[in-house]
Image (cartoon, rainbow, N blue to C red):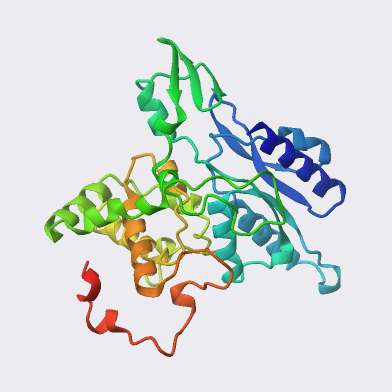
Length: 342
């Protein structure tokens, strides 16, 4: 990790010194122990703020899109001949680059508007699992020592193996190395356990439909519609979200369970062929809603029906962005084929 961090800082400093980027998005130490937070640096000397560790969990592609789109909107008030392009640098792990690939495929910005410092990833710590391991006690002091997290609480010092608190999406990550990059800060990381990627989804598919629906109702019953999942998702960038439209009004503003279910179903289906399993939505959900199980189900279907893995390459377009003349569409006329009657 130290070598990766050193190389990452060197590359960030170089990019800013050479003015190849206007701003660089990375991670810095959080204000609380055992945390990291996104940071935006614009001067070479600020590169020392950058960190890379097991607490860097945000998908920074979200901010790449926001910075570029906000700049473009600001340029609308500038004369065409005076308009300037803004180039954004970003520290990106595998899932972050997959989101960037999707942005590029959906023409949200050009490849020349983003410079990617690729970092190999071996997974990040799930803050909820860390909290559970500490019995819910507040962390007063903490540090990462190799593959062990040392935390000091009012109850004393405790050590936690990183392997025991890895985020679920990291445990079976298929793309833990960058898909695309302009420079790499470190050697490629070993694969996580991609063979088990869909094990949980397969087990869920095999349950009776009544049990599956009951689980969906139970999980969505936790949702308070704070929209944190939407705000954190790098693939949610509509200027006006459907939940805020009034003509037509897709969902009500009450706490009616059906409105919550409609919101979640529609958002889930907006993610078809676009979810990179970065875990951002699960990480920020204050109620612990199991969104990932349903997103992975759609991900599994996209692969089995269309041989697509979201953001796996610039050439592999999302299923809803391409047309194949030889597609016989059996999955539409015979949905029972292949067990996709869920």
